[in-house]
Length: 134
Image 1 (tube, rainbow, N blue to C red):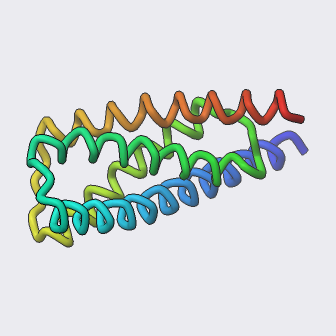
Image 2: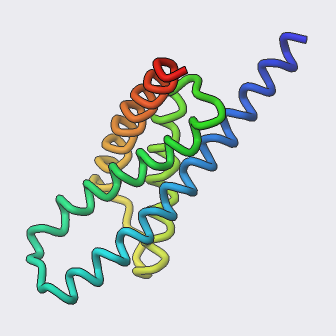
């Protein structure tokens, strides 16, 4: 009985992580398209692109965690951190395919670390917020 319960928890965790990461990448695509349009319309400086991209990543990861932790508000740190990592890998693959360049470098590792931390923090925040509101 205990073994079945652990397998169910693992499958829920994996499904939630995948769901959250896909949702986060979807939001990122929409946000990046909107930002690209704004850059084109308003001649936004190149210096603004990196900070805005970081903020868009944070928002996307937060929204991915929000949707993933909605039904199962447990293990926020682990779920959020995994969503951040999977999101980074998926986003890298999607945006590399769109740009037709696949370059793994230190920047990618920085993105993974950044997303792991942000995802973990978002997961902790959302699970604790859910517990307090229950």
